[in-house]
Length: 109
Image (cartoon, rainbow, N blue to C red):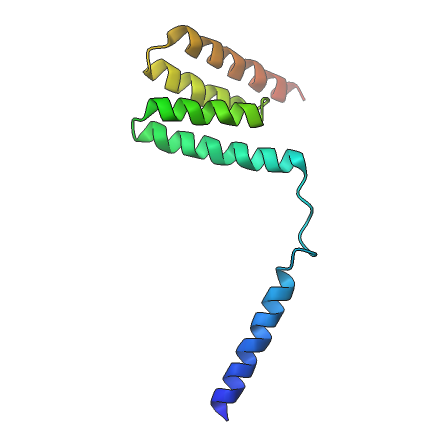
């Protein structure tokens, strides 16, 4: 009897959890929210690559994040750091300048 009650309780719990996680109840994902999520994931991947010393991969990840969210200073700052490590100083300066400009704009809002 106890085993049957345990199975029944587990089934009820799974049913309740499945209902709580159903897509019908999830908030809609907007294109802007999706782009922000992708950009955050790409920045995190860029940070990991940078920490591992793979500056080319880091630069690609940061650049991709900037495409998804072109108003994010973190993407451009990371790109500047990676480009500087690759010896691309002019490109790094341009990325840093863009990061600074975007950061200033965010402070003004």
